[in-house]
Image (cartoon, rainbow, N blue to C red):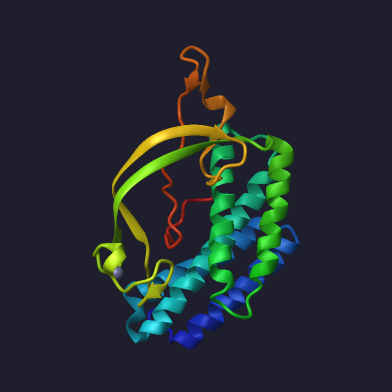
Length: 233
Ligand SMILES: [Zn+2]
């Protein structure tokens, strides 16, 4: 696996994406997951250690392909989960977050990879989202207001305002992100039309006794470039 050239890697991952889509089309979600997870592993291996043959640009494209494959893997899980009659509360929360993660990944990849069926996948996430809404309603969301004193660049660790890197661009296989430092929450309000859909508060988190939510998600731990496998559910 370590000797794959970039062209081979690209072909294998593209073929895997097509097979994954075909499996999803016929309802074979577990098969789709297996194919997509293998593609993620290939990209990750290409980036870690096995990627000595890859140029800087090829490493960057490999990360973007990995992000697409991870979206397909999580989409297969969501498709599988939403078809289940009984879901525990924690599974509903996980399903919601993973749907949002899929969408974020696919939207990121859409303008960066040509010839891939990303729009088709985005529509598929949209359909799952409709099924989710029918089952669990529109929801209520926390809207935290943050004070962030400074932001560092994930590539050079310098102050983001004075470095040359651009947020969302991949440099030599590493995604550039702003890392907030000295951040604090100033206030939290509750909205039906939130800025961040991940900040959803769930009815089962309401504590009758204290008359408040036992858990309000204000910090987002999702990482676009995290290719590790969260497991099927
Ligand atoms: Zn920088």
